[in-house]
Image (cartoon, rainbow, N blue to C red; front, side, top):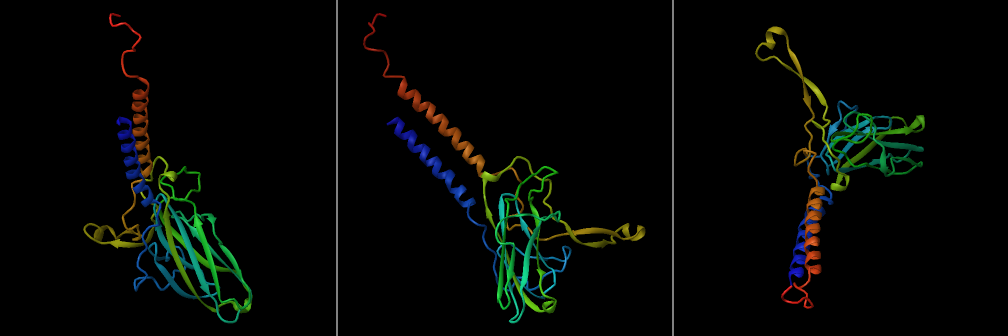
Length: 271
């Protein structure tokens, strides 16, 4: 009976621990695709259009343009960027490419997905995808690991006939992320996420009017819905605690099974 109770308690603890772990493995909630979704793209890193995870942004452009968007990605997330380009009715063979850069403007390699695709003459749409590696909370200075902060999406055509240059196209871009959880957690965290300043403003208050205007950076406003994570918590702590409890229960159960019922019958009472 005692062992049965211990096993029941262990199963309950496993159920409680599995609940948050399962929640962490689901994709992050999608933002509304309503009227707040951007309908234009930037032309450089500095003017990249900000989008939230789950938003489907659209933009009209021309073949040969560089289209830029930016979105936030936090530690433990695996970004998934997808783009669809609607081509004009008449065109030659074109090759389109989707690139993703981190907050330091380092090009990040795609873990899987079709990053470059060639559309044959007359093809109506081109679909591209890039699934990045899991964003790490901390990395060595020499490494090229994806870190928390702003990520840039660049969409452009890399090969086309000169006659097709400047033809109108319509692009749709969406950035999602799947939370991987403690299996990708690392020790350490960044002091601040890699969110660069998109522009500068002049501060003329107080003594600044006498000494000249002071320019301060205006940081990017995009961030996860629940804010940036601290970098130290993950469901790995839950499973570590559960493992400790199970080890203690196993020790108690082993002792209960091996200690016997007390004094052996073959020993005389006077001994």
